[in-house]
Amino acid sequence: MKVTVTGSLGNISRVLVEKLVTNGHEIKVISSCVEKENEIEKLGAIPLIGSLEDIEFVSKSFKGADAVYTMVPPNFAVEDYYSFSELIHDNYAKAIERNNIKYVVNLSSIGVELAGVEPMTRYFNLEKNLNSISDLNVVHLRPAMFYTNFYGSIAMIKQQGVIGHNLAEYIDIPMTHPCDIADLAFSFLNSLNFTGSQIKYVISDVKNGGEIAMFMSKAIDKPINWVQLSDEVIMAILLQNGFSHNAAETVIVNVGKAIREGLFDDYKKEKYRLSESRKFEQFVNELSVLFK
Image (cartoon, rainbow, N blue to C red; front, side):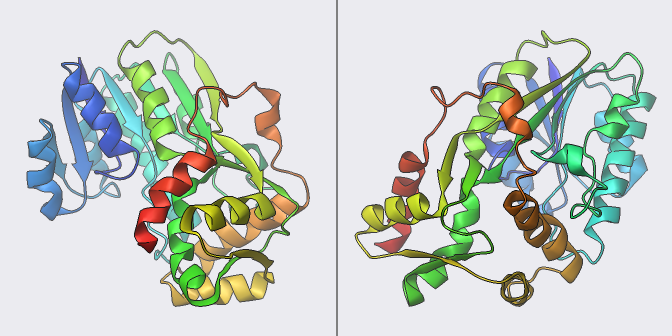
């Protein structure tokens, strides 16, 4: 089977590519980074170097594929993240139609149903363009906050012993390990046994801020406190770390607001795979090696 994978060799796509190649599929990997070319080839896949903002490149990359894995690259430095996401998905939809692709596994997001509604007015619906394509079989994977986001808290933990967030410590946070997403994406792409438009939530665990701090504290043997920061402080921290104002507001600050207001509960509509997934306790052991 021929599969084109977007997302370069990120936390999800690398694992997905390895699984697909191991199972005998011909895999092409789209990356904007020419330095990734050799690494992709070493995995047994075919590198396609170019920009997802170029419709002709995307269309050419999808040509001949039996299936495609689509995702929006986390380019949080881009000035208008909404327009960037919209362009990428519009290019995906056009390329899929041009090449008569029949199977797509799409990385969407928990809370996507809130797109366009306060406070998520600039949150892009990662499903609507693909759902408009007739006769397309598509699975939308809806993960929550990635465990790997906590890598961004390492400096603050080391220097201050705190995890800063715009959520209070008692608020439940649904979270996802990227490898759980890769596993589920592989299960669909390996067999192509899905029809119509489907939604699958990928929730690895649910913990509140106090529990997150407790598990991380045990893993690194250092006291850690969860501290609620104002939206303004979180924004300032993100800007210092290279986020554009628009991206920081869209994917971090306003998502926190929506969770505080109890709006991010759509995942509860479907029984999620807690019994099979990687629990947060397991992830903190992965994270703890960075403190040694």
